[in-house]
Image (tube, rainbow, N blue to C red; front, side, top):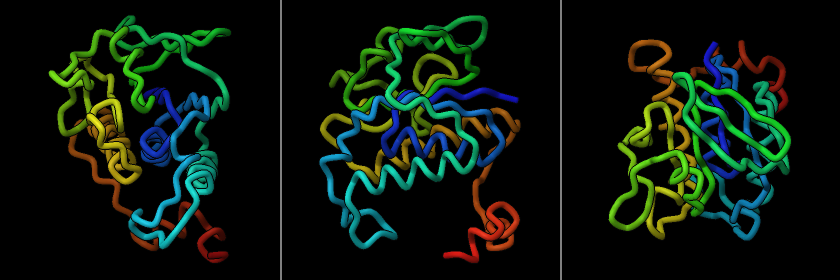
Amino acid sequence: MANVIVVGGGPAGLSAALFAAKNGLETTVFDTDGTWMHKAHLFNYPGIGSVDGTLLVDTMRDQVDDFGVERHQGVEVTGVEAADGGFVVSTAEEEYAADYVVLATGASRDLAEDLGCDLSEDDTVDVGVNMETSVENAYATGAMVRAEEWQAVISAGDGAAAALNVLSKEKGEHYHDFDVPADAERVLGSLVDEE
């Protein structure tokens, strides 16, 4: 089973984690809880009339937890390097191996630069439409790839795009994460009835 490490616990990182984990990839998130969402109140997020940013992040955390994501809350990643066809992600305490890495560290581009990801003329991390960087199987999402375009919906979409590309690579064909009510009943069971 492929192993995905997501660095960052805002909308981009948690979206990447959700899509990866719900589709069977072993997924780990490192989250320092420094997301700017704690300062936000959203009334422009499709499907949600109005929500406090912290409440949205807490709900997203609950979702990834429900799908078995290993979440390291309050743990800072100090380095990411390519190694043996994958990556080594380092914290102050330990090193973790990953087949794929998704960098979702807001405007901080340090880890992407250290990994050797190409930067654009505006000093953002250069990515394609699938959010893959110049380093194969390394993805960058959200504010680090968009100069001054820091928006929760965009960030969540970036995270989803990164995870869908990882899933497409793993499955060897374009992968579509589209569920119908029967899928929800099968996956979530009684949770659907409680809503």
